[in-house]
Image (tube, rainbow, N blue to C red; front, side, top):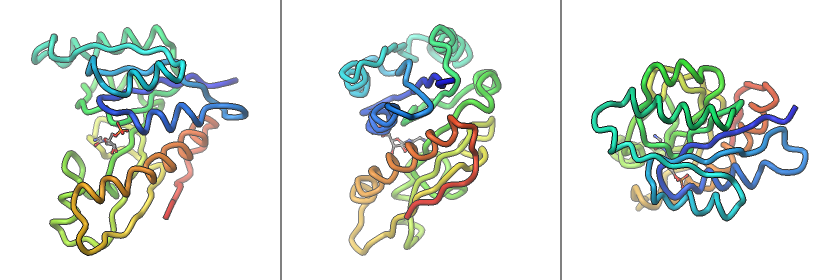
Length: 197
Ligand code: GAR
């Protein structure tokens, strides 16, 4: 049976776009919802252009009440009844109840070679550490921030003169390729580790 996929974003949504475009033909899944916590996120217009239903809810209207916001997001998601939730540049720390609810059904892309550089500013931190290699990871989401089981990684080399901006730009197409590849397999129940680059 075709799997239903919801994609959560906070920004431009290039990973979301790659995922949506991949879910065609013999792909085992289809996008049923793109949700954002940022009402004017660029990715929402892209999703609409691709014919995917969208929803948005501004987390700021919930103040510091993360639990209430996540419950509201959960209600929106449940209306779309996804089998899989993809976090594609969704810049929110999730509450334990939300993570628990979607456990085993939620995957995230992170712009580092986890377990290195959990959290933010991953490109700059790789440069500051003098790394010669960088990359991205897709993992299952658990209560451990950016620490769930890895499903795949893509590697790129760090070149002399690289900045956080050049690294981010060079990594992005690999993020798209990796996320697309992992989702296709994940939708078939395959969790074996994927390597790119
Ligand atoms: C991507 O680089 C993604 O890996 C990162 O946000 C960017 C979103 O770009 N995610 C995180 O940093 C999560 N901690 P996009 O909106 O163009 O897909």
